Length: 250
Image: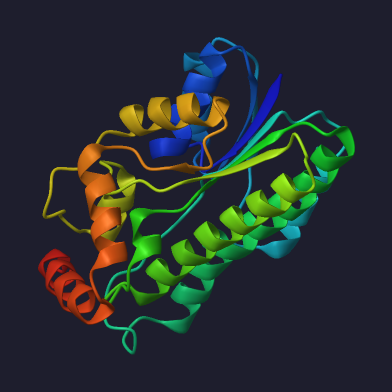
């Protein structure tokens, strides 16, 4: 059994790689921090192939796919993701294009490529990592929220198509709330609520994934937040989220 995990050098992707290894999966660990990837290799019980890839580059994504097109990938986890916080007009265009390339384009390419092989074999599982941000407007993190909404809609729509085809291929989407990872350190932000641990999110998501759960929302408070975002009108959510995000900016 073989799993390809992007964003494997830290956070949720790192912990998912370790947890899948416990289930007997060999891991293709994709990331940019070689030191962390090598450490991951030492922590895993199965074989780990390290791929240092900048997924913001489309050609790199395609090359990665082509390299493993003849491998029997059982599970694909698209976990690589970056964020940006601030006023939309003040964030640099290059920063946001880089964000879109990693969060959307890379996820789209890998999903598109590997689902084709999985459909031919009528087996395989894809887990795309979105966020609870997918369910709400995101002032002061507008582009990030929009990318996660894209990942969520893409994943659930593909899942419906697979059901109509009566395919055994499964596409699920993970929507965590705040998680204690290097993501918030890079953005230099503090959460207004206590974040969950990447270990908990990884174990919860893989257990649900292997059971065929389509939309995976870890944590009771996070589930309540998602329900609230579906019930409350956007005008209220926009104001609430703006106030919440403005407190994060240091």
